[in-house]
Length: 187
Image 1 (cartoon, rainbow, N blue to C red):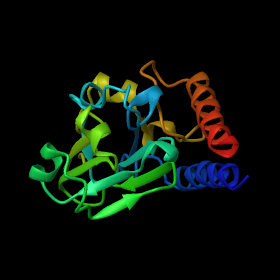
Image 2: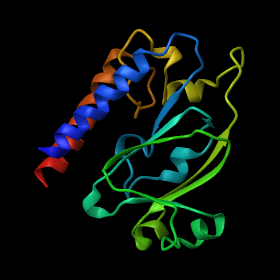
Image 3: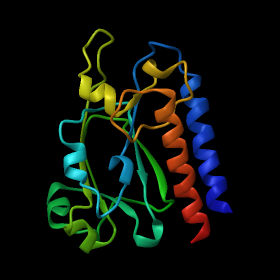
Image 4: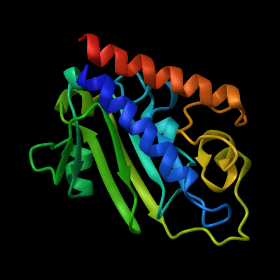
């Protein structure tokens, strides 16, 4: 029951934060790590992140089963490459974690389970400066994530699919997050 309440709180907060942002006030993109599969050993995290742009102000969402390990943020590229998860800077344990990208630079995330990390369950994020208002966004970026400026008319939730954003994709994501929450609640 607590997991269901947490899921509802996350979705409600995302809706209110995104609906309170005035159109054109700077794009904020929500990236669901791993897409439809989420943060999972069977996800191809490196392919998911290839070519994706992360900017200051964006948020990355980790959706995973806490029963199979947590997400840790690592200090260095060396720890990331070696999957040395013993000296992390932060551990995320909720099963649905939202990480704000508040500054430029490289951030390293990995599964708290070293074997899962070695199987590819890790992510490095190069956070770039905020895009200028008139800068162009690639079609790939536009179809894989939700930008607050682009979604002012609809309740904003993170995108996990690559088709253009329609009300159906929001319904699909809502159902995905509901089912993920239900899974955590049952287990």
